[in-house]
Length: 239
Image 1 (cartoon, rainbow, N blue to C red):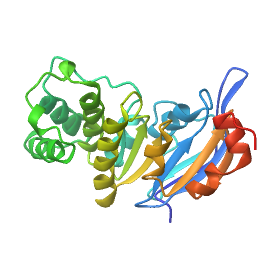
Image 2 (cartoon, rainbow, N blue to C red; image 1 turned 120 degrees about the horizontal axis):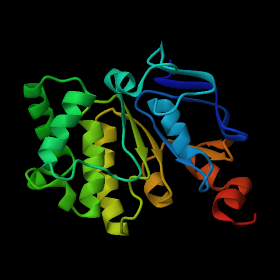
Image 3 (cartoon, rainbow, N blue to C red; image 1 turned 90 degrees about the vertical axis):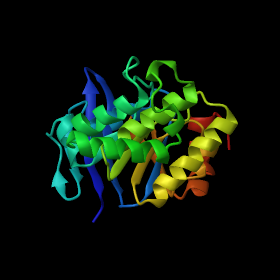
Image 4 (cartoon, rainbow, N blue to C red; image 1 turned 180 degrees about the horizontal axis):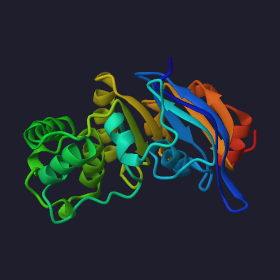
């Protein structure tokens, strides 16, 4: 049984259909990469999975449970963690305090347990040297790490990553990929939207490509990237 399954999921804003009968399944331990041009509906797809936006049609199941109508905090406590494209930490709180807040309010942990979780995640994401620094003063790489860390502090089984490598230099993106590989090795299932293709290809087991809210391609990463229609739509390259 798939850990996450979407069945005919659709979302429209007026006459604009941004997600059009998307169906996909993600197995436990898998890393699924999501690709598509700007405006293809990738982040909306995440919003539907996390519950930030309600579906108009279709069904979302997680660990065999129908999540279609659940609120975001209920999905988070069930094990769906999420990072956002633009990091928005509590800037005047320390990195450690940000993680404790995520563990308590996102993960439903008691405060003492949240301290232990925060310390573990600080070590896991390379943020331990910055634990007592105000989150608002971090570099972009460390803000991205903190966005990842806040999602991990909720103890997710499924992690949604929205362009977490965006804006980073190549060495910084490689550092982040190394950290994500360790998270993958720990057994956490991931769905990753990313435009930094070399970073995505280093980690993804499978790619799912969308365009104008509809599925364009799905399969093994190299086969998908060699697909003439994917190359034309996503990379602007004629076959």
